[in-house]
Length: 292
Ligand SMILES: *[C@@H]1O[C@H](CO)[C@@H](O)[C@H](O)[C@H]1NC(C)=O
Ligand SMILES: *[C@@H]1O[C@H](CO)[C@@H](O)[C@H](O)[C@H]1NC(C)=O
Image (cartoon, rainbow, N blue to C red; front, side, top):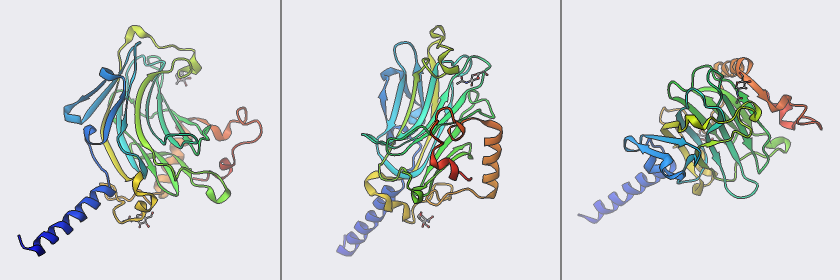
């Protein structure tokens, strides 16, 4: 090979390597995730396309991403345990490690047969949580897989269910409130017993006669900046998700704002921003600024 060919190939492979590094996107468990706990309670099936987590009296299970990310769009398709799922909690969340951590949560609280699941969401900024909003679901989340997504950019965090925004958490650093933006986060998915609080305030317990319970996950999609790249990655031209939409600037257009209002009006069952019992000294400051 001539030296110019060699340097050309070297140059090309550099380009390819840097493109791959900036947008980590995959459908395969083995590439991006590893089992975190539960051993044989976590089963990786269909060549890494599907994961089932099971829960019995001895253990639940969980998995996490190998990498940490700083901003991105994260999609997960989940199918929840049907029938009596009281006491169980199925999760998909992002979290940094260490003290004063940041976290973005989707949790699915099980219920007795025929009673609805609750989608519980929360955000922690520098260790500060207590920002819960809860929703009913407008479909049966146990019959099929549905897509739950987190869009996290420098301006806001958007929670989506089948691409419908259900919650937006804005960056309000301009009025001095902390926003998750410096600590890279890992992706986590877990299935565990929380019958001390999860269902109807802890009154309905897990029925272990029905174990094992199962939660299924597939379509692991990550379009994100790696934590090691720092926040500047979000301003490169590769910040597009596979469908061509850019998560880095993603906000809501008029139709999406209407959709969000519809979801919040019809399906929101708890909003910390109206909880004057919890916040006796006044509602959190961001609640006054939570225009959609
Ligand atoms: C379970 O069903 C009851 C009755 O419909 C409801 O009040 C409750 O919010 C539901 N969800 C949970 C997690 O308890
Ligand atoms: C990527 O994100 C940055 C910063 O949010 C934005 O300025 C830029 O236009 C985006 N690029 C593309 C190709 O979407």
